[in-house]
Amino acid sequence: EAAKGEIQAFLLEAASGPVELQRQWAARILELRSEFPGAHQWPGSQVLRQFIAPVLQAWDSVEGRRYQALLHPDVVLLEAALREEDHPRLRQALVAQYLQSLEYASHHLSESRWIGDFAEARRDLDRLHVLAPELEAGRKLEQLLQDWQEFTRLKPSQSFPEWCQEKL
Image (tube, rainbow, N blue to C red; front, side, top):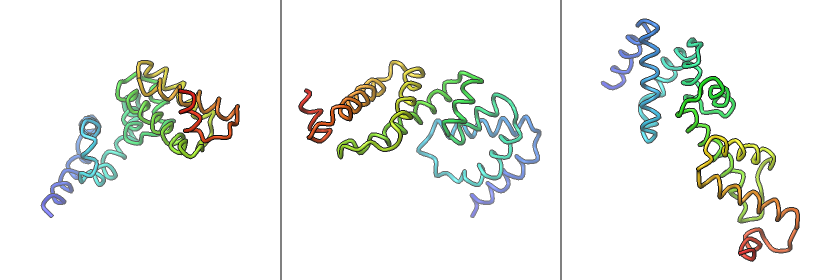
């Protein structure tokens, strides 16, 4: 109960502060949230909903859009924000989104099934290479996509994992 009261007091104080101070607080809270991803269950949902989201919606600038994209890590928002500003946190978040998308698309290859649109996966991997060319996961995913393309072109009788094993 005491924590809820403190959060309410913070929200009232924060909402009545100068716009620049509201932006500083919103930015700092989001930075802390990204520095400590394991703390995503903090009582911040109320803070996000009642304070940060409205501040970001009104903050029409490159910096505001960066924080908006980091708050809602959507590929479209992140790509748009990155086009405006080459910021390391935007790059990290976008790399994470591309990796997550590729992981999802390929997670049934052990059953010889690709999930989703292969062309979209190819596009995500190409963009991943541009953002993080040194990333080992990107090189491994590149080989995986090439193998899958060859497998689907050849249409062998064995499963994808068996075919890959035989290639070695």
